[in-house]
Image 1 (cartoon, rainbow, N blue to C red):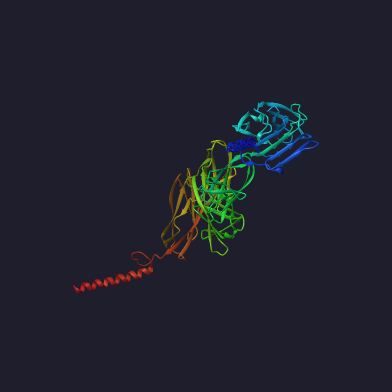
Image 2 (cartoon, rainbow, N blue to C red):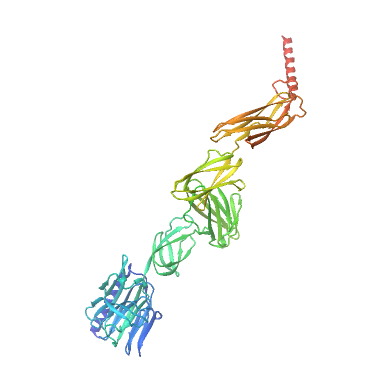
Length: 637
């Protein structure tokens, strides 16, 4: 072994180490994961009688002796750069590396000539991988310097993104030889499917028949990596998490905080997220570009996870909203004897489990054992405009009731103003009531107003097509006093209002006591919340009355008053109690009727201080004793 050979080899080793450091640095932050192809990744095409092809991990030898050409191709997905050590034996070897988009043989080729220069060409043709098309020189001839035949030369060919464009850069031994800008004019770098290694490049430069041997060593493919930003939150409190370990195929690929990121190659990745005090989460993502991935982790004290839970709840005021989500056990061993509690939520109308209503028990809803995904629905009426919130709490146990798990989630929602304003009557009354609606959103839509009684039966309805900012008054006809629900329906939504219709007429005197031969008085109270004078006829009949009493009255607008109806009591009455019928008519329609119980008192006997006849004798006895006491005192004097 000569000193010259040793020195030459040491120089080669030093250059190789320097290149590894240099290109390792270049690769960081510019391209993605490193992929070293193995023998099973290559396909080989040979044209001619004989050839010698050697393929091993990261090494490819093509010997075209006795053949017109030999090519080996490597199937790739989105790839951004390639590095290799290159050596050609014999000065007349024509070889190159091509990047092909599809199987039609369209792409870019880098050709090394025996003169020690490199040319960049665009090729097109068919019947890939056999080239039989045409080529155009698009990069000119690059002077590679002194001959690099029979020695290793390190090449790096990289597609580099510049804004919305891509450039193609060719490095030799760490120095930039060539930069083709806006490479999209020739090929889309993200559509490259094959990297082709060939010797010789038959048909280019009329060099058919050139033969030789070429080695490609230390082949490294740099796949494109995309930026994956991670949102890491506590699933119940929505608080950001720190120190979350991320694994793929059991290997740790990062430890991240909320907002941290990973770089992943295109395709499907199954990631596992782990943190002390939390259940682990496995998530499969399909990477096709830069993306954001949200991961929710549940404390290990919780038994359930929430799926299909709405992230942003916005409800128009006075509407009924149904919160629906899927409750799935994280561990079925912790999901026995489950109860749901709701805190801070008023106007709960109904709770359902898988479509079946659940009745409350002491303020809780019993859901039983939950062995799989279960749909939970909570129906409630929205409150006033603004931000609101409540808490869901699921309490469950293990099979032997020795451990309790609590899954608590805070829910926030926003109540938005209606797209129209509603002006209700100050007081609803039997008969016609004015309901005024003004459109305020600048849109056109149909509003249907429906009045339902306490049994849910429709008693009145009407509709109007509103133009932007139009105001319209409905005339709502209320058939009688009682409790009603007013619904305003528009664009598939319903706002509801509770309506109470108090009686316009009330009987103040429900019962009274009168004496034979005396008089009695019945008092009725009338209210008129309308802007018109109301006219009524009062009729009293029955009992001891010899004939019906009729009295006509009027009530002024927006006023109320008491009306007294007097009647005479006959002397010769048979019974000590009677019932009188009171009826109020408005026109020919009866708008009010009730009855009065009349008790008949005895007008005979002496009564001190009022009261009944039985008390009269008591007071007489007390008075007599008092008189005797006065006489005794007089005698003592």
